[in-house]
Length: 351
Image (tube, rainbow, N blue to C red):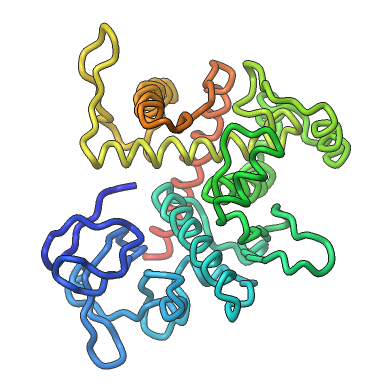
C-alpha cells in the first residue's frame, strides 16, 4: 500500500486513521483518488482538502466506527460498504468489535482491487459480502464464495480463534485479510476465467476444474497434506484447481501490496554478492513475473529474518517455485487484460 500524509499538516498517517494525531483534523479516504484527506465539516457535508474543497459525506458505517471512506452526497454507503448484504448483531459489543476489524480487512482488499483496475460492479452477478457470527444456535457458519456472494465469519478477526483454526488445520499462515484475498480469487475466477474465455489456458496450467469439488476437498482433508510440493503455493492449493487459482490469486495480492508498501517506505536491500536492490517498479502494474518474484523473494527473506530476530514466525513461510511463478504469470495476464478492458469501457462511456 502507498504511504499517506495528512493533507493539512503533512503528518504521516496510515490507511485506518480517522483523525490526525498532530493537527486534529478528521481524515477520510477518497477511493476515486486513492488518497487520505483531511476534512472539515460544512453543514451536512464534509469538505475534502485533497479534492480542491470537494463536498463529500462519510460512509454510513463511519457512524459505527466501521469505515473511514468518503462518498458522494446522496450516497449512504461508500464504494466498499455498498457491497455488504449481511452484518452481525452490533448490539453485542464483541460482535461489533469483530465486525470493525473485518471491515478494516475488507477496505484493504478494495484498495488492491481499485489499484489493479479490476471490475467491481457486475449487474449479472453482483459482488456481495455476508459477514456472519457464530451465535451458537444451529450449524456453525463457514466461509466461502458462491455465485458472487462471499461469506466471512467475523470470529476470524479474533486472534485466539484464528490461531486455533490455523493450528487445527496445520496451516503455516492464516490472516483475516488473507481470507478476503482468497475468496475474491474465486469471484474473479468466475469473472475473468469462466466468463472471459480463458478456460482452456487455465486447465493447461491449473488442471481440470470439472473434477468433483466436494469429493476433492473431502480427499484433501482425509490425506492431511502439509507439503504442497513444487507445483503449488500452499497445501490447500493441491485440493482442487479452483482452490489452486484462489490461493495463487491471494498470494499475488499479498505480494504486490507488500512490495508497494516497501516501495513507498523507500526500503532497499543488499542481497549477498549483489548490488543494492530496491522496488524500482510499480508492483501493481508489473508485467514481468520474474522481476516481481525475484524482488519479492529478496524482501521476504529479509522480513522473515527480521521476524525471527524478534522471536516471531516467518512473515511469509512459502516457497515460490518456477511452476508457481508460471501460475502467477497467468494471473498477471488476466488482471492486466481485464484492467485494459475496464479502462477502455470507461473511456468510451466518458465520450
